[in-house]
Image 1 (cartoon, rainbow, N blue to C red):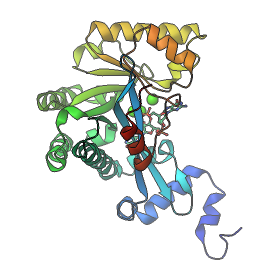
Image 2: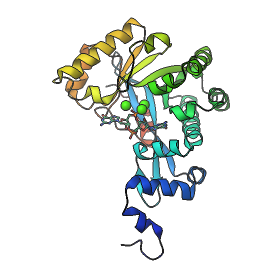
Image 3: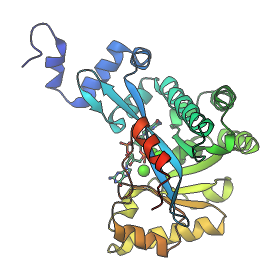
Image 4: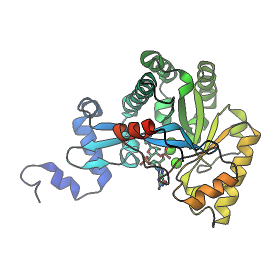
Length: 279
Ligand code: C2E
Ligand code: CA
Ligand code: CA
Ligand code: CA
């Protein structure tokens, strides 16, 4: 192949992709990739059903690797976690998203909440709660425009630490969403024990929701439970009109998915935000 002649990439490409990525991460180091701007934050619109307006955006990281092209976060996030590199990467995403949201607001665009994913390994770090506060101070973003998306494994791995962090974030005005709800080994009681602002229904439950009676039942139950507890419900992975109609009828609050928009690079997302589009 083109990569022959002392280049080890050829050898690794014969093995599985994660081994390749793992090796590259080790070789180049995450810091290098961050410095050389190989990472990029994409933004996916979150639409409020009631108004048809975009009220938020989820920040989703992309890796534009010089040899491999676009590497999906599903591949490199677990790797970064394993290698203890998720903290600097996650902080970079958080800071980038907060700074961007603040820049848009200063430019007079409609205020937007940014949702940032936090991995369990990132949350474990002792100073994480403090870093969030520092990033908000540094970027000047009003904390009410930040939502942190946490998974249940993060919450359940250390409930005491989670409760402490939530109290700090709540006092600051940061919102907390529980991500991928229902996909783990969840106990239904944990949303009762923690003060979440929103529940995100995983896309696996949204698929074919108009025809799939089991997915429909689960989704309806989650929406009812969330509303009883004064939480918003965000459905992800909405790909067509049937899914949207179903979710509108069942009074889901917010929608995210390819039906509206893929995650977009900054400039494209900005154009959408400027257009003040109403769905
Ligand atoms: P997630 O948090 O569940 O994010 C939603 C995923 O669904 C994203 O995949 C998004 O692009 C995709 N998606 C959105 N709409 C649709 C749709 O209509 N149909 C389908 N089939 N998919 C849709 P993505 O961007 O590849 O990210 C995958 C996962 O990687 C995320 O899942 C999240 O767990 C993780 N991730 C991404 N960025 C970050 C980050 O900055 N930090 C951390 N810790 N994790 C991240
Ligand atoms: Ca998420
Ligand atoms: Ca997730
Ligand atoms: Ca998900």
